[in-house]
Length: 124
Image 1 (tube, rainbow, N blue to C red):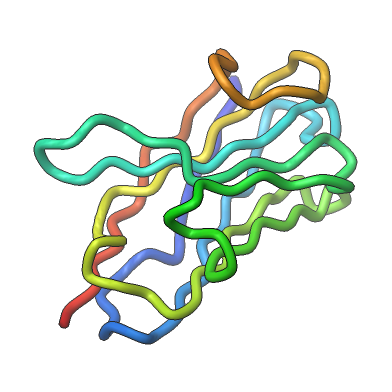
Image 2 (cartoon, one colour):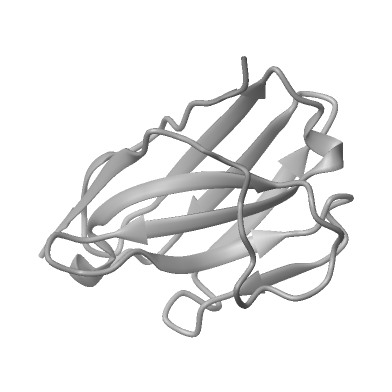
């Protein structure tokens, strides 16, 4: 059974940092492109960023570029989302997702597996 379990969320003041982790079980993470998404109340889920299978390339939404950084440790079967200079508008439930399709392209990618999400709340 495949599981992605996000952790590391919480309440932080604006300007602070959090690091989310997404360890995977039941799959070999190096075979998957990984994405991070978020969904705020009343909003659609949005792409935050992604990382290729080897970790050699990343992509970020304009809203988080320069503040958020995605990394992965395939030996630990874990992907990370480092969030710096957090803003109240970053408040959302954050999800990691795994896609077995080849590297390349981020738009309209369909992910095979999703985590349950972790809440991030940024106070002003």
